[in-house]
Length: 233
Picture 1 (cartoon, rainbow, N blue to C red):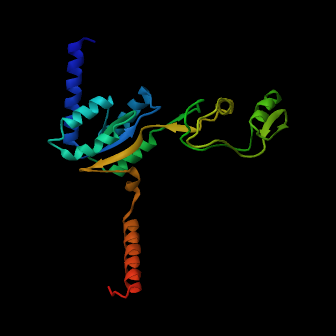
Picture 2 (cartoon, rainbow, N blue to C red; picture 1 turned 90 degrees about the vertical axis):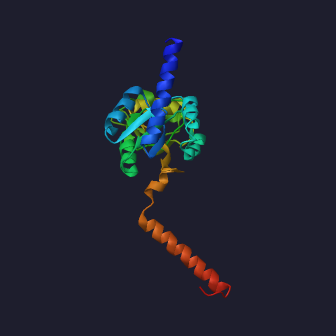
């Protein structure tokens, strides 16, 4: 790619990002680790007509946003979150609806040695279908087994991988032998931007009942405090 072509491509990218920031009042900041090009295309298709996905280099995203702060100062809150492998999902639709579509587009994946486990992984008590010659492998992992009709049976559920710990080579090999794909990867929602406010995606699950409950709890605390100090409310 020539220098002029690259410069034109960058200019077009900046223009596209700025236009999206102007057009859409809401967007998700998403992590894209372990998401391949085919899966990304499937996600784009699933969101068609509802949301638009834009990936890119962090340096270019920051530069485009910094250059647009005069028009939209609230976007400065986004800058600290542009780290690692991230992108944007822009929408005008209901945030919960788009969130659910994103979460439903996950792809089962094998456990790879050296990768950080996003969840705890358990191997159930089961007949593995593996021959007795593999017994020593299970013993090395301290997994209790017995031979049933010529195949290895795991006697108890085993907590084989802990969340946020690196996957060991032996654990990854065992899960592969058992044809267990414990992980599911897709775009991970890291932050939500909504009309100038930025917040954690867990806020989307707060209901009106939750708000009323917390208000009542707060009112009760104020009442008890006032009674305790002899100050009527």
